[in-house]
Length: 225
Image (cartoon, rainbow, N blue to C red; front, top):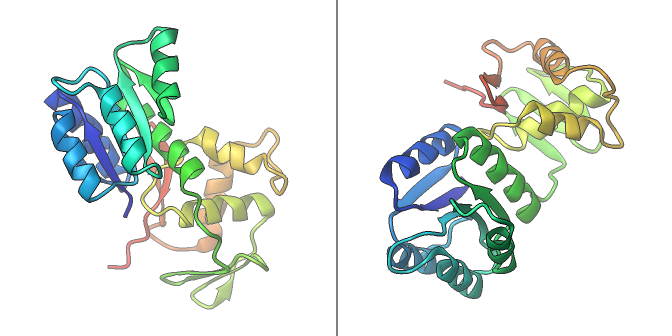
């Protein structure tokens, strides 16, 4: 499971963001100061750090530079009340992968985290994906559910493979539309909701493994219980 460290000295804000990230399927640890966060990251580097800049004692930029030095592979998103362009440039120049200014929507943070992780930690393609009763061949694009063939259009297939490869992660409609507008997609003026509805129907599973996350988008969460 993808691990995230939040370094934030406002406990209520840190807990709120953590709750949204937990709901999106991430493992989250919160630290209220730079020193304790650095010690933990040095011993067990996470996949991504959400880092407040205005921290007590050790400031966020110092933490950022040290994390970049000891674990350059870790993705870092800066959270800051400093919205002026020089502050943004300073944070990005120090090695941040993204910069989010306060106040922000926790839902937006989840989407930005997902975007950064897709850029920094691409997953190697797998030819055969087997999830419960679903068998998917990414080379032939053949999909079988409980032994029966499910014939999907190119766009329906792209929706399915995008979600199934990232269980528990929420994709916004705009993110899925970007996928559908790729070279293999046929989305023009049809909505993502239409494609999702068709995939659900063709899979024929109830409850559907494609969950609607209200106000955010869709996520894969097959319940095998």
